Each structure stands twice: as structure tokens, then as C-alpha cells.
Image 1 (cartoon, one colour):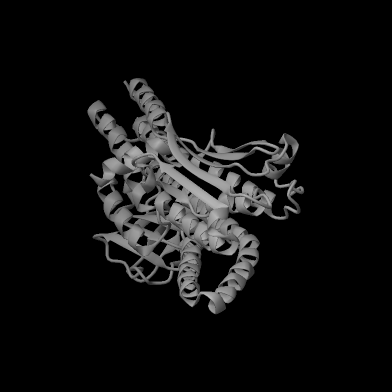
Image 2 (cartoon, helix red, strand yellow):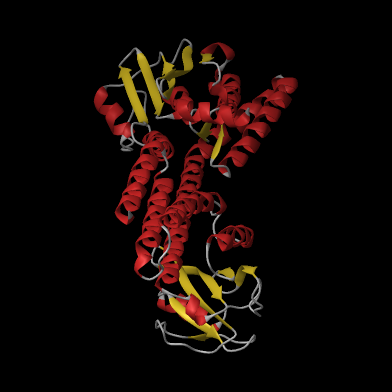
Length: 439
């Protein structure tokens, strides 16, 4: 029967992995299944009815799922309180605490301890943080704790007993989880296995959060780098344009100044956000084109836009469309005649495509490939410094946020124009999920 339960856990893990898209969630589920297996297979020490073991397996998988949401924001006091309250009923412990590297973040239980939330970590906790190994401890009285190596059958008097497990992120101890017991004999190999499994589960989820956080910081840094590349060029030209209108058309100068102010306000706000609605990105692009029309003349830039119904609320990385449109204005415009710029947003299966097409100067395939690779080679219309960086930046962020199958494609022909297509893999499916949550 034990083998059957273990097999069920494995099958359940495979099913979960097949329906959950987030790799971090899959990893956490697999860890939970492994923990369930430990509980089931520990019958040599803690003999329990078969239905009890099956219930333990189900309970542990439920815990693995529930803790994911609480650790989404990292190891905070609020998250720690929620996790302690959730985990305590799922264990045989009389109390549970979670700490960071300095203090106790949360405690839940009926055992009196001086190590309450906000207090400095006990000596055994500090030793576990340094050694990165699980240890047991004993409280001789209510005021102190000492490290005690575990040995089954080796009794010792004390006020409370417990297990301390380190929480590791990238091989660094970031905190601990502590289980408290009233009696020494309650700490058996099953409890040690459960404690270690919980530590592994929480460590995995904290590692997932840290990876997400680092990716977000990287994305923000890339946006700021893109801003640094775009801002000086656009800034000076816009200010010169506004200055020229102050003499000939003061009303238009005031309107442009308001648009320019709003453009930069939204630019700064977007740089602090990981994702914004596609409608906001397109609105920012229209502001950019309005300012450029004032500079070159209303008839020199003709833009059209079509967004498939429902796509305007899609969360996208900021600075996704506007840099592509700016490249078209800067490098595709002829000396005479209008430049037509068309922005299309459509669905294709589970993906969403954003295409920016122009009828400008165009380029050959070799130059397009070098631009996408970030080589920044010269465009036929003149120097093209920074354009490759902008396209590569957009491409890398698309691949990071939308995964395999996403990216940027450039189709261009000299003298006829260029079309840059952004493929957002799985974005339509995400949009449907967001719509269902909002209902």
C-alpha cells in the first residue's frame, strides 16, 4: 500500500507539472510531493493506518500549493505570520516560528517563549544560520535555548524542545523555520523529515521569488538604459521645436509643452513599473508622434492604428512600441513626402502580435540582422547609433516576460519600407485568464 501511495504522489506531480505553466510553481509542487513521500514512507518509525498516510500525502500537497501565494512577496513579517498560522495545524508541533537572519518574524503556538516576533534570534538559530544545517534545540527554562544534537531514545529534561531548519536561497541562509515540541520523545525521525521537507519547500519558493525579483530589477535597469539612449536626442529636438513656436504660434507652443510634460511624466512612471497596459503604451506612442509632427510638419507623418478587441488591456513591458516607432521616424523618413506608420495588434492562436510597419527607406537583410543583434550598424539614411541597442533591448525583454517562442522579427526591403513584428508568446491565454479573474 505504501508503494501505491508513493506512486500516486508521483502521478499527481506529473499531472500538476503538465497543467501549471509557471516553472517555479512546478518545482514547488514536486518538492511538496517529495515531502509527502517522506511522510508516507516513514511508517517504520511512526506506524499509522493507511488512510492516515493517504491523508498526510493530500495535506502536504495542499500546504505546498497554499504557501506559494504567501511567499510571493518574499520573507516578510506579514507573510511569515500567515505561513505559521497555516503550517501549525498541519504538524504535530505545539508551536512554529519563522525568522530572518536577525530577528523572529512570526510565532504561532501555545508554548511560552521569550523569542517572540521582533526579538533577536536565539543562539541555536544563529548557529543554524551559520552552519546552514538542520539542528535540534532544548529550552532548559523559559529564558534560554541550547543546541542539542538529536539522538532517538536519548531523553533530556527541559521546558520545550524543537527543530530548526535553515531557509536557503542560492546557498545563502536567509532565515529559519523552527518547530516547538513539549516533550523530547515527540521529535522522532518522522518529525525531522517533515521539518526538513518544509524547509526545502519554503527555500524553493523563496528562491523562486528572488529570481522573479532579480528579473524585475534587470528589466527596470534595461528600461532606464533605453531611456538614457532615447531621451537626449528627443529632449533637445522637442525643446527647440517648442522654442520656435513661442514666437510664431504661442498657443501651439503651450499645447506642445503640456504634451511634452505628460509624455515625460508617463515615461518616468513607466520606468518604475514592470508591466503596464498596452493601451497606456500606445497612448504614449501617440504623444510621441504628436510632438514629432510638430517638429517635421503635420503632413510628414501619417499614423494609423488597429487594435483587436480586448487586446488593449494586455499587460506589457513599458517602452515596447514607442522605441520601434521612434526608430521608424528617425531612420526611415525620406527627405520629401509623408512617412506612413501603421501599428497593428492582433491575436494568432495563443499569441499576440504587435506589428509596426512603415513605407520609408527600408534596409537590406544583413543590416536588419545586425540591428536585431545590437550591432548598431549604419542605416541607409545615415548614422544609426543606438537603434540596434533599442531593438535588442525590446527583444530581450519580450523573451524574458513571454518565454519560448517570443521575440522580434524584422522584414524590410530597400526603398519600400520595414515591418517590425513583436510576438508575445502565450499572451492571449494570459489575457483570457486575467479577464476571468476580473469577472
